[in-house]
Amino acid sequence: MATVSSRPARSTFACSECGHESPKWLGRCPGCASWNTFAEVVAPQRSPAAGRRDGARTEPVELASMRDGDQPRLSSGLPEFDRVLGGGIVAASLVLVGGDPGIGKSTLLLQVAAGIANGRAVLYVSGEESAAQLKLRCERLGLSGEGLFVLPETNLEEAFRRADSLAPAVLVVDSIQTVYTEAAGQAPGSVAQLRQSAMELMRWGKTIGIPVFIIGHVTKDGDIAGPRLLEHIVDVVLYLEGERFSSYRLLRGVKNRFGSVDEIGVFEMTGEGMRAVENPSQVFIGERARDAVGSAIMATLEGSRPMLVEVQALTSPTVTPAPRRTANGLDVNRLVLVSAVLSRRLGLPLASQDIIASVVGGLRVREPASDLALALAIVSSQRDKPIAGDIIALGEIGLSGELRSVSQLDRRLAEAERLGFTRAIVPASNANGGPQREGINVMPAPTVRDAVRLALP
Ligand code: TYD
Ligand code: MG
Image 1: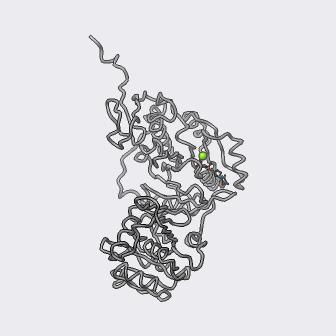
Image 2: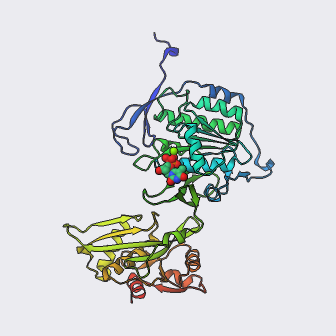
Image 3: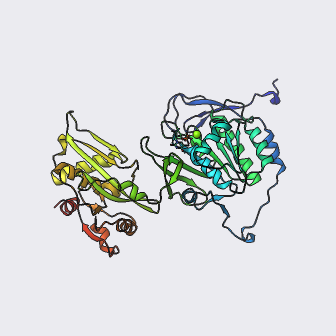
């Protein structure tokens, strides 16, 4: 008779894209519908780190007996970075910074590390670059490197040993895909390694009370490779985004246990690293030519922050059987909807026209409040007539051509006024109850047809 103690370690299978688990191997993931992404995950052996955890005891705490619910936050020295975190770094928090390879994650985190190292020690563990390479990068960024310790290491246990003796204020791990822990007996980059490494980092950070930053690379599908399954482990998830050929980068929170995920940080990648952009609106509409045909300005809200953006459209006679619709920085479905409404409600002959629409500066606008600016840009291009340079347009377009209200109109108008705009076309439903502004003439429009009449008389 077989004895229970000789049973082999139980293994399961997990999807490397979304982390979906299954007791048996599957060709197609039921979680995210990817093919051939299942890999075996062997249940981890008890690790030395797990043994250490057994040593530290935690006690239940009565909330009423605690003095202050607000935890003290550490500043990164980059106000733009602190803002996205919700006002600085929370003690013992685990933060995942994701983004495409080459987008600037290492650069940003090295700057953050150096900012914190001001008078403290910070440990930057890199599985990607040597100490000499990091020194070169530091010099390029104009950072002294004082208090900033780098450790080219891929073994997490070794990194913890070094960190334990250094007692840094912050630990940075670059990247989660290149490190491995002995607690998971598999190759770096595998699902089991990613998850176990993140768990070990969390355990280490929470036990000692030190914030940990993890860098994770995103795959072509837009998920952090594997680390999609880290999102629920970590406290904060930030993504660094940007277009390949634009120097602007957005740092966007998608999860934050200590603050809102609405805040974004705007940076520019320069020769000396990431520079915070103080006035994003100025940047995004700065290159607009006066009297440009096919261009309209709108104010988008990124969290609580209003930003003016230029929406451009180009119509040109189609040579394919079906006209093409291409959107850059905008939702292509909104473009299809807006052009269909313009065809039907305004009688514009768009069925024979290709339309290319884009948001200038590499920004992605996800809210339907940009519909009206898009519609006006299309009409402007179609008629070959420019929209006056002092007009901004806001509103979501409904299927019957009606303009639907946008949120926080006052904030958007204030930003437009600050940048010298004097006229705003807004949905009539918004303008009625909405507050009036001194420096900006608010022109209510019930439908897109009315808006076109106001913008292109
Ligand atoms: P990096 O931070 O290494 O990206 P990631 O860690 O996300 O993979 O940034 C790489 C790119 O940034 C590289 O193409 C060079 C460019 N770069 C600058 O433009 N300026 C700089 O000061 C630095 C350090 C890098
Ligand atoms: Mg890097």
